[in-house]
Length: 234
Ligand SMILES: [Mn+2]
Image 1: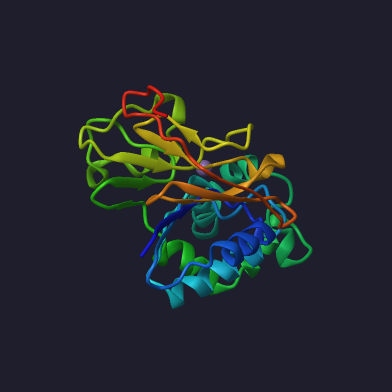
Image 2: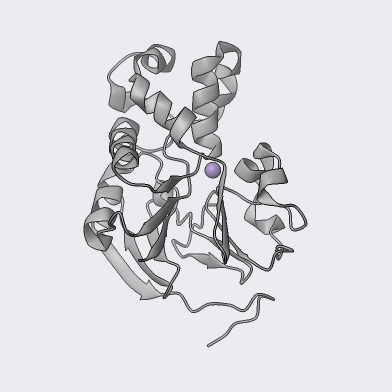
């Protein structure tokens, strides 16, 4: 059994398909998706269709990112539409057809909304890791942390968690395309929206695989872990 995690997808279905083909996770693997499935990218409809299908077939974990939350809020409450509209990128729902974003939002299939609303969760824990979309305060347990902080915290404010566990997050886009490893925190948003990669990391041996926006496997490697106080370990 492997423990695998995949960073921010943002509608890049081709990259997601390429990664899944390459890594080939099964039901006996534990796979944690770090959230931000929607906005900014080309094929939100395809990504949500694929993830909702996988979520029915496998007992995997799907975190809800701030973009997923904003879209869901806009769907449920029109007064929050403007906030999402500001941050969602141009034509976030173009993969659902033509029309204004407001019109297309009404056309999103119910099972895509249900996936975001009911199947996704705000954090996930194992013995050694805490998975959140964006971050968590160092002295707070995940089940006591505010959802806004889990979804919006920036990596620059990350600090070693009191539990001693490593925090695994996405959200803070790494324009270098590289996994950010602070020792106590690993960030897997490797900049697919900026033409870089979607990344899958194996938290057993720290091997990783990266796919490009056009769905090619471009890179494989082993993450050389930093120690928890941030010093580099060879
Ligand atoms: Mn995010």
